[in-house]
Image (cartoon, rainbow, N blue to C red; front, top):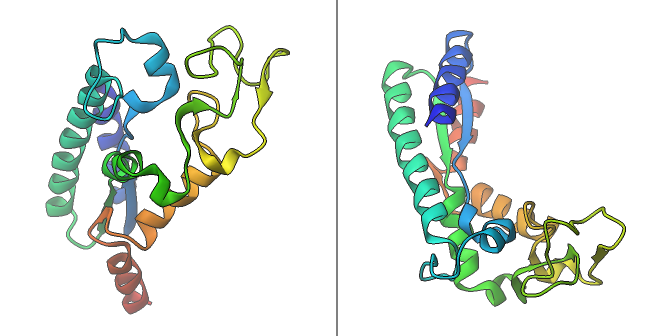
Length: 180
């Protein structure tokens, strides 16, 4: 919650300084990151196979953040404040990974080789025993904490061309163009 409050004050300060166009990204499905899955007990899983307690925390954070953004929209009606719904964009990919070209949902591309996720906190990417996969575009997770370039590309497309920003990203562009 402290992170949300800090973010709120930073956004408010930017708006006070005259910022007109802001895109604020929510948290992803943090419970679907390999590190979370590695550390959490197997009985703490949701319908996606991810860590339920962590995803619940991320979701709650995003609800509070969206409420705070709504307050800022009322307080600064001249500004365009977009919310990028990382949580639901990520969820959409996890629910149907093959639609987006992914074969490996939870295994890391760069890791220790240890089961069950090719991951160990003692053999993370960059350590001498870690290796990278030959086809990172088929993986969602790069190293257990970061996503692959392919996943970031899918998510960013969902923000820019899809309907995972509120209001839609084109709204911001149109407002900016009119302001000129």
